[in-house]
Amino acid sequence: MPLASLPSGIEIFYERFGDPADPAIFLMHGLGSQMLLWDEKFCKGLTEEGFSVIRFDSRDSGLSSRPPDGTRYTLSDMAQDVSDLMDYLKVKQAHIGGLSMGGMIAQTFASNHPERCLSLISMASNTGNPNFGRPGNETFKAMMAPAPEDPKERIEKELADRRLWASTEWHDEEHARALFQEYDERSPIPRAAFERQARAALTEGNREDKLKQISIPTLVIHGTADTLISQSGGERTAEVIPDAKLELIDGWGHDLPPGCWPHLIERIVGHINSLEKE
Image 1 (cartoon, helix red, strand yellow):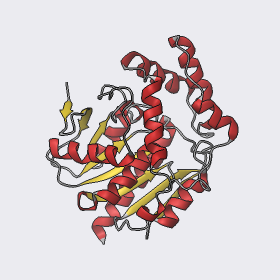
Image 2 (cartoon, helix red, strand yellow; image 1 turned 135 degrees about the vertical axis):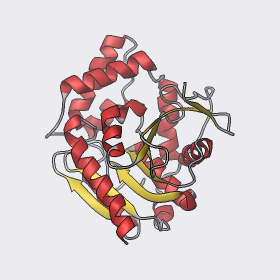
Image 3 (cartoon, one colour; image 1 turned 90 degrees about the vertical axis):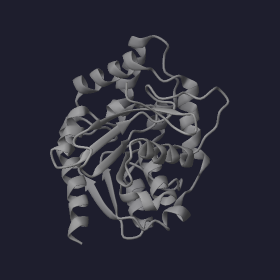
């Protein structure tokens, strides 16, 4: 079982794809999801372009550690987990990417650990500034509503929620249902864990002063159909981080259906390859 024991006492479940000798890309998932969000075929799409890809369950997610009730932690703590996982895997530097809350962790990593970050890829995320990237009222209420105890009802809620912020171009009901069923069979997230993660994202508040200090080459990717973290969240992120490049994808929502994979892979690979030419 690929379980990394970190100095903090946290254990992180991870999977690595591709040749460890290739440049590494670490991928972080969002609130309430698991590393399975980064589908194995998506990861292999990046390995075919010459990268070693590491996906992992953030603390309080999937098969990674769940701290005791009452524990509090921050995005900086979660970014430290990434640095410690890199130590465990003997990776000195890597490209750091994340979606939604994973993007917030990736941004924090680039700010706190610049010497270890080859580049930053922030996807479907924001800066913590409440004036940008706000969800619609219906979307926010759906995300924060407690999940039913019954597994079948829980999956139906997840699917109903997903339809609110899914890609208009590529939403795949069958793929989404299979993903949520796999989440549920593998390790459903308790409400307390969800709330701890949400608190971590909120505790650091507006992170723009830190983001203004980032000197790492940065790509910001956002979907025009994202209603959970609206397009202005990505636009503001690219505006605040010096020299960041913004890529908007028409019809992409706040999800990772197979139809969007080629578009994301193309932009991620293009971003990294452009750095080698500079």
